[in-house]
Image 1 (cartoon, rainbow, N blue to C red):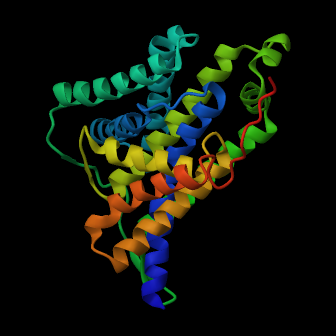
Image 2 (cartoon, helix red, strand yellow):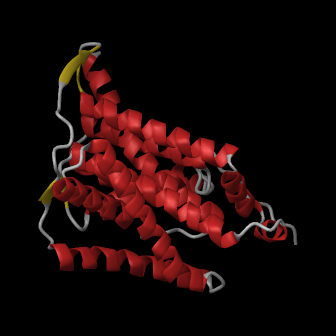
Length: 292
């Protein structure tokens, strides 16, 4: 029983991180219909923002988290303004290629300026162990899960109860009607990129705390897995990103407990193939019917 509880907590921790990153993918897709392949590298940039904020400014966890979220949000908005906005009416393939190019640029720019060697993430939380239902639990696991759930609830409140959130949902349904209502499409898209990037930065710092080594290429595998989580739940749906993130986290952790750990990545991509074959819209998604 204690082993099961331990694996359950590990799955919640990993699923929380996937869900935070997947939310960025799904929000941008819901508003622009764009798969932002650079999002995994914003997660990486957020981890480095947290690293230098904690290392140079000597800030504790919460201020480090807030400042890194703001910096990553600014980075996401800048990428949208410089790279994506001029191509908004271009063919879809142009946006996809641009997103891949931004991803490669962020990785190689980070490596060129900071070096490619892994760095040890600052210890922002004194690790303490305690027992829960016979399982060994750390306060770091609890912090990661609670911070993730709190930010998910904040995002849900913003989307459901604020004017900008309602505008984001309106853009997802019908961009033309939004313009007629006098709401700025540019503002909505900017806020979407800012929120998604802030959540990715949070995930980057939480990963840095849990697995305290960061490097310029840390966003590749994690970013793809978060994308798989978004597709699994239903790309474009916030609830889908949450469901997909936690399901993928559970599958990976329990598969690693039963199978060699080297199979984890293969299992994740196998899930993507199965979902695309059996239910391309994801678990919560519905086919879009267009009138012609």
